[in-house]
Amino acid sequence: MTLFSAIGAVLLMADPTSAGPEDPPVEQGAPAPAPAPAAQGVGTPGSDANLAQQVANPVAELISVPLQSNLDCCFGPADANRYTLNIQPVIPVRLNSELSLITRTILPFIAQERTVSDGRGTNGFGDITQSFFFKPQINGITIAAGPAVVWPIGNKEFGSGKWSAGPTALVVKQTPKGTTLGMLANHLWSYAGKDDRPGVSATLLQPFLTQTFHNGMSIGANTEASYNWKQKQWTVPIDITLGQLIRIGRQPMQISMSGKYYAERPSGGPDWGLRLTLTFLFPE
Image (cartoon, rainbow, N blue to C red; front, side, top):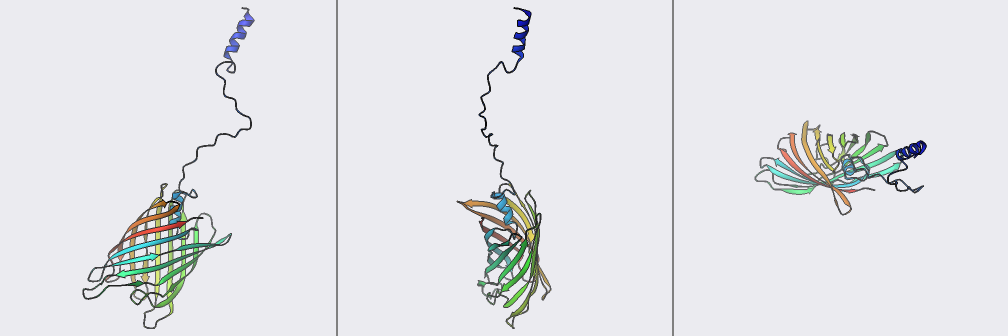
């Protein structure tokens, strides 16, 4: 073997393209392999976590129908129970590219045990409260405001007998990590109705905080504090809520349970309560 042929043999052995198994040919123009799909998380459209976080926003652009069952105890000397079913449809309407109208309606049906030993229980509908929120399209924060009205359909035990109206407003901040923080408020004055019924002047303040997790579970706290300006009396229930988004077939819904403690109440009012809510969701 000559010196030049020996050097050539060494260089040939050192060339990585000349030895070892060949790589499979790559077809020119073939698409690259698709990356593995990312796990759905809070904020991902269509995910359970995203729907659960929308439920936490009272003016989300999502049709929902909550059925809220409340059991409160203990009213009057007889420590009576009161059951209230609130039917609360939320319907959004897109007015244009910059403004939406969100309607929130509350229709209560109430069953009350006797509050004194020689009394009797009663049941019937309470007044309808309807709120109209005009919501501009603002990135990063939700601000909505509009009128609230009371339709006095309730019976004499549970209704006010008065037509009432006033302003309502809401501010909500939601983060990609699933946190929802907000405040809803309204004030209602009576302007017409039965002369033998007392006038209405009442303020509602409802701060709320909810944390939504990637599996659609949520935990929250809120208070539905109300002040009766005529009687100069606060009612302040504090709620701790645990919820889970579920699906029955293709129908998404949220089921939630909460315990309620009345930090302030009128004389003869309730001490504590329980709440079970089933919310049907109708995403687009």
